[in-house]
Length: 293
Image (cartoon, rainbow, N blue to C red; front, side, top):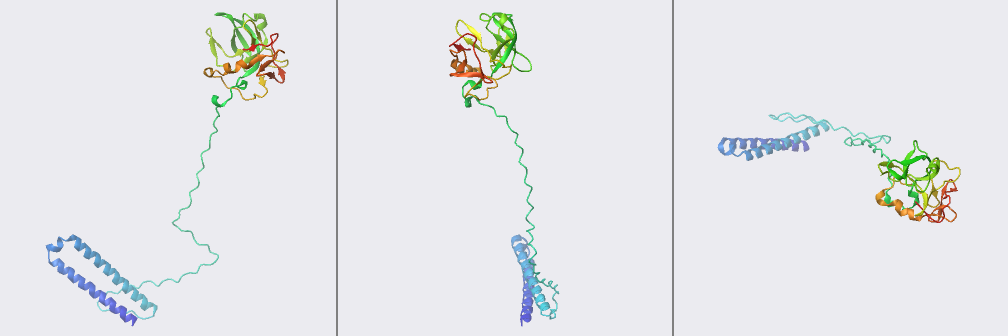
């Protein structure tokens, strides 16, 4: 009964298609009315195509049903034979050991790009972050190798000073009235090394000799015995790293210098704490209870 019903439906669909074709031919024969109605013509064409597809699908289902039941296909006179659909393949059971395949549409994950190497940046010490204390001054033991009078200033010495560097520094000091030129030769001293170089009567000076000082008298401070050029001056409790170069606009030295003092024992002090080099004290030759410049 099922086969007869499918056959009758197929015949009915064929008759419907034939009827539609006849109606389409009638519309075409009317001439300009149809020719000018392009949208309507397109709609009929689409409907006709859909109907053909449904008919072919029904025929294929019928052929499949006959083949599965082992029956011969019924050939309708005048109808085009349809190609039977291939029999559906039996589902293959997956083995328990087999892993399900990943979706082929998923693209393999891209290799994670390496982050660019960070170049270590040099940490620049900001003046605003540093305490204004003696640790910012680069004071070292030095040796005045030679001294002569400044060619353009009677009150200045032009000195060649060894501070433990590759070559001596040129330093200008206003010591002519206080220290005889003979005592300036091969004279140990304490040198402030990180002042900004400055011209004094046309010649550059690259440091400053530290001295005990009053308005009437000046003496060069003496390093402890055994100290050598380049040894750093330290003050206990103020062990920070010195500035590379003091900014004259910030008046760093001018803020620190009032706390320098020569004690009654002749030792150089900062806020009451002695200046030291390798554990030895820095002293003034004879001056006591005075300032240091």
